[in-house]
Amino acid sequence: MRDIRPKRRVAALGSAGVLVTATLIAGAVAAPSASASASAGARHGQDREARGAAIAAERAAKAGIDWQDCPGDWGLEKPIQCGWVTVPLDYAKPYGKQIKLAVDRIGNTGTAQERQGALVYNPGGPGGSGLRFPRRVVTKSAVWANAAKAYDFVGFDPRGVGHSAPISCMDPQEFVKAPKADPVPDTEADKLAQRKLAREYAEGCYERSGEMLPHMTTPNTVRDLDVIRAALGEKKLNYLGVSYGTYIGAVYGTMFPGHLRRMIVDSVVNPSRDKIWYQANLDQDVAFEGRWKDWEDWVAANDATFHLGTTRDAVQDKWLQLRATAKKNPIGGVVGPAELISFFQSAPYYDSTWIPIATVFSKYVAGDTQALVDAAAPDLTDTAGNISSENGNAVYTAVECTDAKWPTSWKKWDRDNTELNKNYPFMTWANAWMNLPCATWPVKQQTPVEVKTHKGLPQVLIVQSTRDAATPYEGAVELHNRFKGSRLITEKDAGSHGVTGLVNPCINQRVDDYLLNGKLDAADVTCTPHATPKP
Image 1 (cartoon, rainbow, N blue to C red):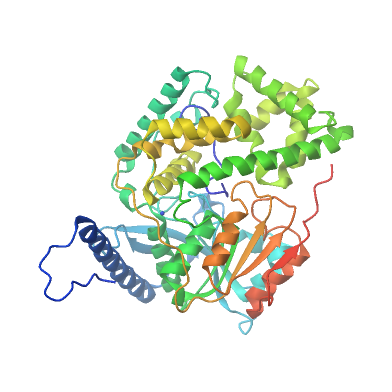
Image 2 (cartoon, one colour):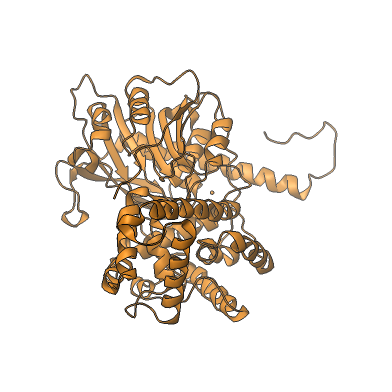
């Protein structure tokens, strides 16, 4: 999702190419229990990692970043500059194997007196690259013009992503050519085939990237972020996180509260341990269905333009007909039900896609098959290993599967998704297959960080739309409750994923006021929605 996963072929695994020391009572002779020993061991490991992170940050502060023009094939024009920050693969072994993280920046556009430091960005995923963030200055984004006067805009590729020690789980050529089975299973044999693909994918991750996998976690990305802060010469971090980037922010605020200056989190992953990550994905399925219906209502209201039906049910009927046709014979030989979901899922994500998606759908119904093939067919050129959708998918899987314990019982997966699919069919099974490698994950799964307020945490600004499909609204409320003193801006009756980049003066002015002046409203704020697209 610049969701909690990268934009990807849905269900790449076949169906779519698709995170106090115990004290003994004096005189006690009994040995500590196994669970006490385990928790003490976990604490010892965390202490070693905390020391390792401090060592790495101190080293990075001394080294700084050797800024140069960006490599020509990175697509980052001057005056954007690129560089590298070195971090330990394993923070428990800070002098062991090191990996290099790609970072980029563009200087603030205002005066030296106006400059307030660096604003570091993560767009989500897991698996998303932040390197394009400085381009918001190059392209003169009006929404970010005021912040750009005060801040250097800094992006980075998280560990495993893009140019930062990229990982892989299968050959990128095979990934884009993966079979086009319908994600919604008709038979037990269909489910068995998907289970086999998921297990093979997990094994492929280990075979191709086994050294990295145990260290592909949100807490390690958070430690990396603190090392980047130090390398930038910043005593405190200014951070903007969207989607999964909000979870990075939540964990950073928990682990490094005294290192934060300002933080905005936009479209929030629910940070509850109970949600990371199995339940979060089930919650997504419910929210996607709701936002899908919003889009269908909008299409119906604009029937004079799109001719797809004057009611939601009529539009849904045409969608089901399209799926059935593609299931029987892939459209143009390349667009099956999985490709359809991969294309149409952008509508619940971003209302900026409502018009182009409805236009393609309308053309298809009117007899123009090619428009749909051009829009939805797999991109067979998307095979440049370190920046391919295969890499994004690998990182998504590695982080979510390693971050937390997942159910290993197929009966539970089958029962939960079969039940959910009855009322929320749009994304349920595609999402299940996407995540199923976590059921047979080949490395130890961690316990997520308990996100909460610690001494030194500054006021955090939380921004969220109520109808967000990828990160349901309840996640923002949960983080708001956990971070004392935070403020929540709610965009009511809107559903685009990623709010701060849209034109809505009620939100834009408050984001600027926070970044430029550190000011927040005395209470939470509800804003009316940004403008709905008009065909």
